Amino acid sequence: MSVYDPSRHEPLAGGTWNPEIVREEIGRIIGDFQGALLSAGNWPTHPLDDETRKPKWALYSGAAGAIVSLRILRSAGYAANDPSGLLRHIHASYLQSPDYGYETGLQLGEIGILTPAVLANPEDRALSDRLAACMQSTMGHPAREITSGETGMMHAALTLFRKTGNAVWKELYLAGARSLWETWTEHPERGEWHWTSQIFGRVRCYYGACHGIAGNAHALLRGKEFLPDDWTETIVRRAAHTLSHGALREGTDVNWALSTEPDSKRLVQWCHGAAGIVTALSCARKLEVTDSKELDALVDEAAELVWKAGPLTKGPGLCHGTAGNGYAFLTLYQFSGEERWLHRARHFAMHAIQQSRQGREQYGQGRYTLWTGDGGLAVYLHHCLVPEQASFPGLEIL
Image (cartoon, rainbow, N blue to C red; front, side, top):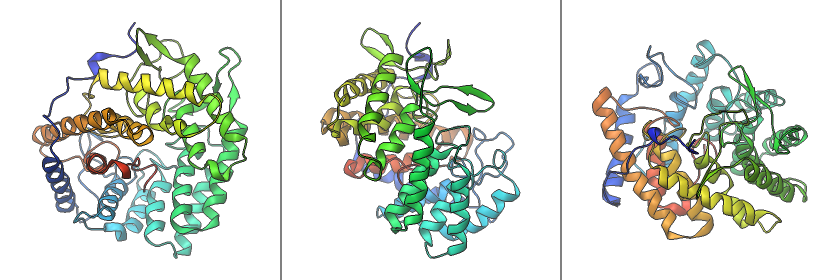
C-alpha cells in the first residue's frame, strides 16, 4: 500500500512563475470579495461548503474568514476595504444560526469571530471579556486540537498578546499550554507521545497539523519564550520520536496516516499528513536542542513527498488544497533559506491560480472563504511574492 493516494493529486500546471499574473489575481480576488458582499453581512455560500447554500459566519468557511482575508491583504498594502465593522453583526448572526452547531473554538466557533473583532477594537471591554470567556471554555475540550480545542485558542491568544501587549491573552495562552502539557501522554502500546482527541464522535490519536501532535507541538513552540526552559527540548524530543516511529515509508517517500488506527487514511494535506507536518515543525531547525536534527530530516523528506505528490484535486484552498500544501515549501524556505523550496511554492501558486479560475467557471461564483477558498489563496499568493512575510493565515495571523 502506497504511503499516499495519487488519485487525490493532479499533475502540476499553470505555467512558470509570473509576479504580474499573481498580483493581478490577488487584485481580482479582492475585487470579487468586495463586490460579492451581501446586504445581510455575509458572502454567497459556495456549494462545496454547503449544498443548501446556508449562510456561514465562522472563520473556517464563513464571513469572519472573508473579513480576515481582506484585513491581512489590506495590512500588506493592497487596495482592500476593511469590513471589520461587520464582525459584531456576524457574531450575533452566528449565535442565532451557528455554522455547524454552536461552539467556542477558533475555526468553527466564537473565538474565530471575536479575535479579529478585538484586534480591530482592543479597547472594547465587552468584546474582550466575551472572548476571554470563550477562550477559557476551551480548556479541557475533548478535541485537544486547533478546530475546537485549546490549541486553536492558544494561537489566537498569542496573536492578541503580541499585537496588544495585554497580559490577559498571555495568561490564557499559558493556561492552554499547561492544559496540553498535562494531557500529553505516552501511548501504552506504540511508545509514541500523543493527545487523545474526540472529533466528530471518533476518539483517536492524530499525527497531523490540525488535530494531532504536529499542530499541538507547533502551538507550544510558537510561544516557547513564555514556557519553562526545559519544555522546548522535551517538545522536540517527543515530536521527533513519535513522528519517526509513526512514519510510513516506501523507498524515499515518507508520510503519516491520519491517526494511529489501522488502515487510517493516508493524506497529503495541511490538515492531515506530510504537508501540515512540514508547515508546523519546520521551525525546529532553528532550535539548538537535542533531536532537532532528526526532526529536520523528517521534515525535509516529507516536503519532498509533498512536491512529488503534486497539487491537490480538491482545489486551491488552505485546509485541504494546493495553497495549504504550498505553505510547506514557503515555511521550509523561511527556516532553511534554500531557494528550491521557494521555487516549488511559486509553482504551486501558479497551479492554484488556474484551479481558482476553473472553479469560478464551473460554479459561476468565487469561493468566499479563508480556509477552503479564494481568501486563503490570495494571502498565499502574496506570501509567495514576499516570502519573508509568510505566516499561516487564520492561525498565525488573524
